[in-house]
Length: 320
Image (cartoon, rainbow, N blue to C red; front, side, top):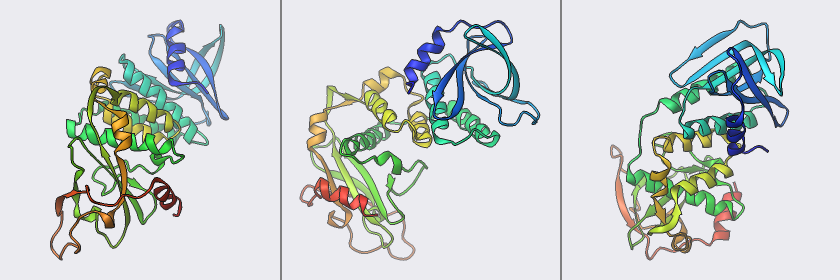
């Protein structure tokens, strides 16, 4: 399969076509007719063959994207010309990270859809538009938590479990991973010397859920594994999961490579100090929140709590 970097390099090396044309190269992905290339201005494009040429052509444009539906295009491929009706998504951004995100997400979109219907393509355009328009920048506490979640995904993936498939993408969800309607996993990380984490009460005691907590201790290390490299690893793990890739891109898009590379933790220390606990074994209030009381929060010291074995945790996940 073509990697994101390979496609980026191939498009970059293409000659820009004459005005009004597209220079395209077909990418072999499953059964889809998928093309990447350049327009006359050198912008990167993603295109698919139209599934219904009878529908009226339309164009939508934002600051960084153009979606041309049912465009009659003079396609230049390997020096030959062909007039074809296509759906063309153009990335107007000159920022390499945004272009790579454009390629990565369109690839995941293709892998996740049986066919590229107009509705699905408009949804892709909308998702990319919202991504490129987002100006939010996470704070250091949020970045540490994000590192912990990514580390847990990579750690358990190496043990045969792909947690990224269960990652909850919406804001303000009670748990980080939803294994089933009943089973939930929460990731907690700390840079302190003691294994102390902050919890919402319902993350530890609930009549509705069977809860496990992955506790990760981090130690800052200038020679440690960076958030940038961890992001790249998890993007590879979740290469075919559009929603997961979109969530990652949205979280990091306003950070440059240097910023993400500066966040580093000692991998050996983290591996040795990653433990999983059943919520019932974590110090907590034993009573449910009384009627009229909500959003109870407190710190719990897990130092003397009994962790699960890795095999028991993996068995718990599989017994859905």
